[in-house]
Image 1: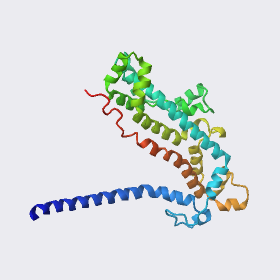
Image 2: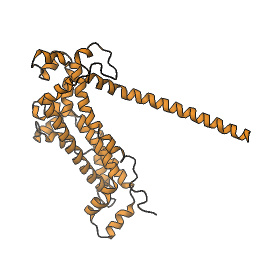
Image 3: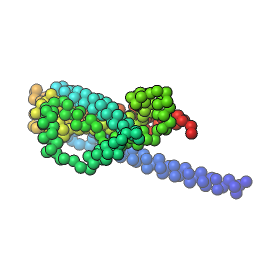
Image 4: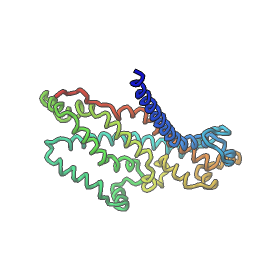
Length: 304
């Protein structure tokens, strides 16, 4: 019995060593991933005059909320935040609905133009008209200096269409056939059969759409930069990052009330505070969507 137990002990020891190495590697990855975010958070919560000295890592040395007070005191940034939230919600919602409808049509084998439409969509993934034709098109459509330029051009993502179509193709065809036998039309099949089973992929592409809209700033720069009421948070963050000197940052953020206010903030502290404000909202969405990524909605739905 002693000779039989020895190999098992060795195997267990090797398993524990390997588990320890894997945990150590994962811990290092987590540290490398989280440290920059904690550093930005610490600087945003630290006094600006003390931050100039350097040496801030993951904890603020002189805690203060002055940087965030200045961020939320600026009406331009409040407007930008509201516009970004509205744009993200509308853009992601309409994008998911449009993508689901188009993908369902392309997944139907009885659709006579299925291959032609799918090929046409695929061409747009590799061939683009370029920035100037896009700008001229947006101008001719009358969407310059309008909120619709944030929603309409990106309402449909071809790559997401193929993701959803592949997901729908993997669903049991017997479910749609059973619905047809029960007298359901195409709209009823789509609403009552396809959509409930597509919650995982809807959550996934909805998150992709939301992140894309939230992080977008270049369209604001191209089409709505002359209208401060249509600015977005990422565009304002880009302007702060580009204005690294105190005078430019103070002028842009309207920090000219009095000398004490100017001394209590700095471009670096303001950049970090705005970065946190722009990152945390979209980061908070992930835990609520994560559960849909790996859920098997059709497991056991049909047994062949």
